[in-house]
Length: 183
Image (cartoon, rainbow, N blue to C red; front, top):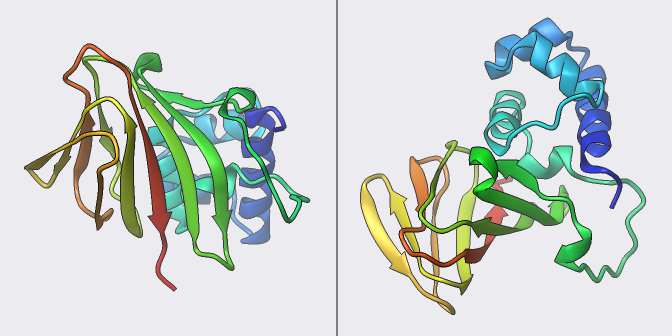
């Protein structure tokens, strides 16, 4: 995979230019400062997961619209160890884009590592979210209702609601997120 900062920079610039938007316009739509957007677009800043969600929501695009590389083959085998994660919450929440959004398929797939004793408050976003636990115990708080999930369990919910991923254990939690977007 290309260096993630370069991919995000390229895709943000392409999206902005394609829509005829200035950095000021994008800042107004997303709530992300013009200075931060310029740094991201110039490849000088690696945005957090939260910042990318704000941009995606403001521009009404999928999260992985910024992570998609061009010229992908028909068959892909991906090794997580060869991917650069997006990092949030001081390195306690790592997101690996396994299969970025494809407009024909209308979904994207991520692997997430949540370090022991930490939680991540997710931005509300479009789509339905499917969470599958690979290892560890995850507590998912959806609008105040808590669900404890163990390996081989899964849950789905409307992602346009408040949701928090919680690891209250002393072990890493690894889980998969599939986000399915409406037509």
